[in-house]
Length: 337
Image (cartoon, rainbow, N blue to C red; front, side, top):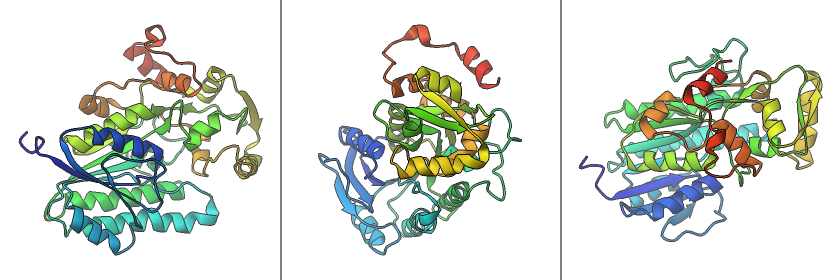
């Protein structure tokens, strides 16, 4: 309790991301935060009131000097692995995996650090028709990984978990987020669902689960300020089938034969209609639903259900809209269907 009342000195990676920038702006308004330092390999598009922004590659030696100067007690590693195609896969691996390895190694020399928060993804589970209907945090990850991205996430999580087992034993929080969506979201899945005509895999109607950006920011803020070490699946209550999500948004669906689907999505990416990376193809084939009980027990009830997050994505959700909320039992039955 005494530790939580101390003034926070927070270092945030990935501050160039819009969601991360919104989180930082909320942390700036919190009186318990003494200092915030943001690091990214790109210049942020948003201005901040009192955050010190530094443009640096996490793989560089400059990172050690930044950590030594800031002397953070909490590190939020929110620089997500780069979305992209096979052409820049090696660069993305270097930036995300090697950057995390260098960050973890650098932290071993900074005695002020006590907490580490990692923003991971449910894509670490990959995608497989033999997966259980509802995945829990205890589910074993597929080895070898089903996708290159899942392998990178697994490698990143393994690197971070070593911080909890070292001599100083940092309190490590790993948050596996569902795809983020919301009214202003430009995340890959949000852009995909907003396409006027949405390509889908012929013969498949996957169950999808999301988390609203505002819920993601709220959970990240609590993880930054509170002691909540552990592994959490972060996804809203309930699930929707792809066909249901498209009906909510009034979008037309274009079924494509599986052998041609990759080509179609590649053309859509090239035309700037979407930016859906290859690892999402497993989700659009098999779907994915996880148990969020552990996250709700620690962080409280999510503001948006998956269905409400989809409605907000398309601008059709208005608070409180209580009549649209299903009971928790109904949501669980639907998710398990």
